[in-house]
Length: 323
Ligand SMILES: Cc1cc2nc3c(=O)[nH]c(=O)nc-3n(C[C@H](O)[C@H](O)[C@H](O)COP(=O)(O)OP(=O)(O)OC[C@H]3O[C@@H](n4cnc5c(N)ncnc54)[C@H](O)[C@@H]3O)c2cc1C
Image 1: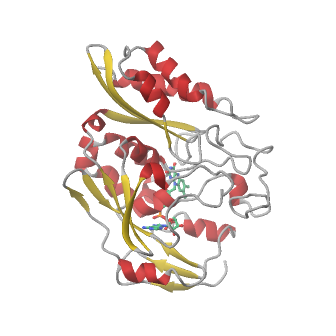
Image 2 (image 1 turned 30 degrees about the vertical axis):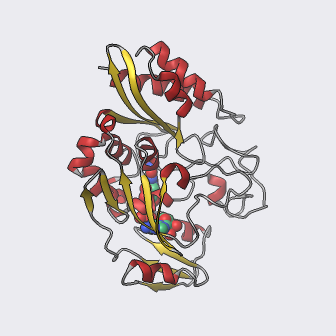
């Protein structure tokens, strides 16, 4: 590991001000950043420790405002979250381990980097880590990589389970940017890789996430998260589904659907939602709707299995949510 400086700013504006210094990065729980430093994927010159900043609370008013430094465990265990947004709690508990979740923060979870093995191996070509170097994943070991929204430059997936649940509930992310406080919808926060896979998000450089806001979302009280992975714990999603369903007299009145492990961003399944609404709450209809969304998929040599996986997982979860 290379030498670096370390600072603990006293407030959010002070933290953002340090970001004009070369090689400065925010340090929250460190569970992703420090690993990447050890691997040589990133070599910051200044770690700006934000854990002392006052963003540790969860407030309930017109929805829920979650401080960026709330731990993953604290969020998953919160009574309001478990009652009104169970999908958020389940998504967190489907990831990492108890120890990691105790340390990891909400802001850090959203900005964790991809787990693509070519990104993490500095001896391999990766446009995300080293723009213009190429993408060894395309013809390499890519069974866990993207089938939706990828580009010739990058087939990495977003690793965050929490982000998938936040997409399903239309959350927004509040931040302190170079021009002061601002907010962005979670749908606009994450991006497709296009020809700039080095950019994971649309946040202005040097921005500090201060909170995530969940809007009031009555349908989310009947929501769930399902994840398929290579092993039972400590593994990222091969595919995951966040869903909420409102069925009245056998007809889908309303639905929310987002997928994880399949794209550079949490994939909100808008086409499937449109196909589902006002149709019968039957497994056949659920499968047809999932297939409408999956028509956009462009699998690689070894990851076409994700298409039936996503369809079946979606059908299974919607069946569970059907009264
Ligand atoms: C073995 C293992 C298994 C895991 N499994 C899963 C899993 O299955 N699912 C899953 O979703 N996650 C999983 N994780 C990832 C884990 O959830 C993340 O490492 C964690 O959430 C990151 O949070 P952190 O606070 O430690 O972030 P850090 O490591 O401190 O930071 C991560 C990034 O976010 C930036 N950052 C942090 N906070 C802010 C902020 N407030 N504003 C702006 N930038 C910020 C940092 O600069 C850094 O770039 C796993 C991790 C490990 C090590």
